[in-house]
Image 1 (spheres, rainbow, N blue to C red):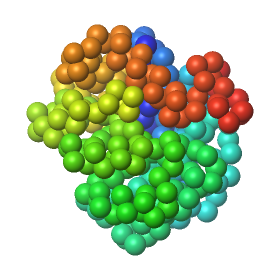
Image 2: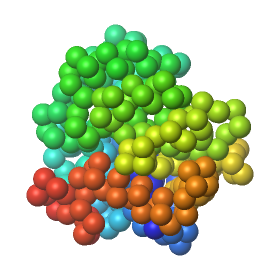
Image 3: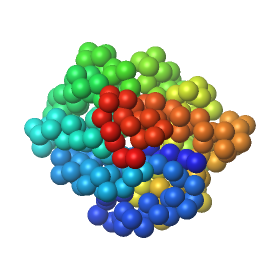
Length: 261
């Protein structure tokens, strides 16, 4: 059974119950629905709170950095919330000023460290500043670079800081050979899988809305590249995800808080 560690079940274009049901039928046993702003995080928490196999994150995406992080710490106290994020830097779109992005990211790194939460990182065309901020604040013990878009060099930098990396449908794109090269090299104890749905549907579903069920496609592709049976990579990535987010197999968070069963 697979674990989609990064999706957006609560997205306005998604019927959460339908998407979750399709995922379960496809062999996806757990999902994390990821917040991108304060309001979006509240929606994620609402969905996770009524589904026993879904957890949430709460964070401020770099696109929304201009709204600040006031009120975020309160959301992190919710028992369904297993991580800060997605947080980071996006210099491709620059929808918030870069200085603001850096400050909001810095504050979320600090929150993850102080509260002992995992940190979910979004970085696009901003590797140097991302690594510099992590070094300045201290990379949280449980950190994941979601939707990894780097190559072997960036992978090495992530691993040197103790981080894990999560691969989305991008790894199946012929136009992303550097991502595939990294996927072939990443240690198996640092690899996670995700959909980032409803975005980034994998081959052969490109151009269509993505869904958590398709994490099985991403996983099968990676398993073939690593010479592993699908079931073995599913076991490995699920164990890695449980450990990263502090979720016990029974659904009890490692900090003593009880999450969804």
